[in-house]
Structures are given as structure tokens and as C-alpha cells.
Amino acid sequence: MTSLSDAAETKRLGNAIAKPISELFDFGRAHDFAEIVADGIVHGVGLVFALIGVTALIFYATLWSSHGELAAAWIYGLGLVLCIAVSFTYNIWPTSRTKWILRRFDHSAIFVLIAATYTPFLQRGSHEPMIAIMLAAIWLVAIGGIVLKCVFPGRYDRLAILLYLAMGWSGVMVAGPISEYLPPVTVWLIVAGGMIYSLGVVFHVWERLRFQRAIWHAFVIAAAAVHYSAVMTCFSLSGMGA
Image (cartoon, rainbow, N blue to C red; front, top):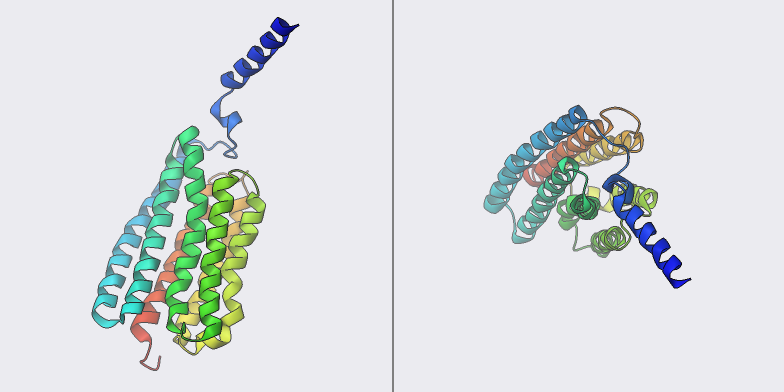
């Protein structure tokens, strides 16, 4: 009996080992070479412009902003570059166990980007208790989301999408108070960027669509560009009666 059970267990383990990586780790629909190249181009363009834009932002903040504003610029800039760079690496990496690890970083980086994007805006009014609490709450939720993605990889993905959207639109709770510290154009750009992100989610979940990932990430890059413009106007127009 023992030998038979051992043989069955050995066979089961052998079958598991023989399975392709794509069956052991769920990465969704397999994408062909053209789709991967298109997605890589979208990421590459976004990363180049992010590096240029963040450099310009930090240079400007170093010359004209307070220490708190400069720190917020650094947090935002690092979050933006980190998110695009990690996403770039994950999405072009061949299917493997390493890609499964990168997936955790990719999904976690989205939480970092959302919190980092909020930081320059909320920092402006952080001396007000409600806005300060909002800033702390955003980062606490981001940390919780990162733990969720790292401890339970491949699970609760739909919940994570809802959490991304909830974090992204949570700013409406302090829209009134924070708008007193931001130029009107900045507020409109924040809303526009959020709408682009939200529309892009349609393509994020539409996995059967060819070039789905490239389209989704194009929405992400476009929304990030709009939010970058919001951050720049926040720094350059604040205090000028814009």
C-alpha cells in the first residue's frame, strides 16, 4: 500500500513539474510578439518622457519651492518613474517564475503611484487636519494594498481594481478644502486624468481584445501625462492668482 501511494504521489508531482509555467502561474491571455512590442513601445515612450518631466519638475521645485514642496515633488517623481519602469519590466519579461514575482511589484507600484500623485496636491493644505488625515489615509491604504498584492499574489485582483479606483477618486472627499490651495486649472487636470484612468479600466479587463495591454497602458501613460501637467501647474501657478 505504501509503495502504491508513493508511486501515485510521485506521478502527481511529476505531472505538476511537467506543466508549462503558464499553467502553474496565471498571467491571463497569452500575447503574441506584435502585442508585446506595441506594449513595450508604449512603456518606453512613457518612461522617457517621465524621466525628462520629473527632472524638470524637481529642478523647478529646487529653485522655487519650499522644502516640503520639494519633498512632495521627489515622492511624486520617484513614484511615477518607479511605476512605469516596473510595469515595463514586468510586461516584456517572458513567462517564468521571475515574472510571477515581478507581477507583485507591478501591481504594488500602482498603489505607490496613486498615493505619490496625491502627495504634491495634499501637501499644499496639509496644515489643515482634514487634508493631513486624507494624505495619511491614502498612504495607509496604499501600504495595505501592497501587502495584499505581495501576500496573496494572483488573488483578489477584482478587489484590487476597485481599490485602485476608490483610492483614485477618494480626493473628492477633500475637493472643497484642497481646491482653495490649488489653481483652478490644476483641479480640472486632476479630474481629467482620473477620468482617463477610469475609462482605461474598460480595456484593462477586456482581455480578449488584441493589443489590449498596449491600449490599456496607453490610457495609463496619457492619464499620467495629464496628472503631471496638474502637478506642474500646481508648482508653477500657485500663489499667482491663476
